[in-house]
Amino acid sequence: MKTFVIDASIAIKWVVEEDGTPQAVALLNSALLTAPDLLVAECANILWKKVQRNELTADEADLAAQLLERANIELTPMRGLLQAATKIALEISHPAYDCVYLALALAKRTLFVTADDRLMDKLRRQPDANLAASAVSLADAAVHF
Image 1 (cartoon, rainbow, N blue to C red):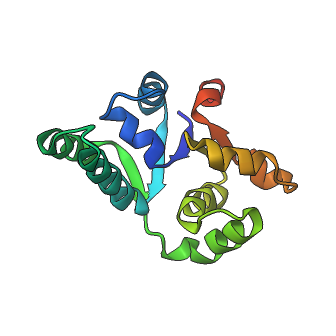
Image 2 (cartoon, rainbow, N blue to C red; image 1 turned 90 degrees about the vertical axis):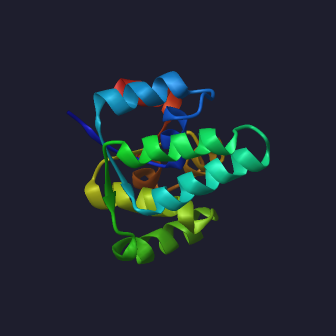
């Protein structure tokens, strides 16, 4: 079974129906998944935002959080990723917290799967072929598992 690094844009789709939910669930069921422990805070923040926007009730967010806590994802401490994430963020001019996921994928020599179109656009325009090749959009991920 193949291993992928995933971010909160993928994990949240397992518990909240969004565009890409079927693909995210297929990924969950077909691969080993890992993420930096930043995933916990990012998922909590997304659930909070969805309640603030009246997209979820507080009870729905609580249930979603419980389900995410039980998801089979290997969480990796971020400390060892700080320098690499900072370098990537500066190189592609993108927020560093997203680059932590990419740094983990590079460290583990695996693909990073994301539904973040803005990040994927920046990576596609990146002259560093190794960096660009280390990430794949959720829409394109199925060919890799």
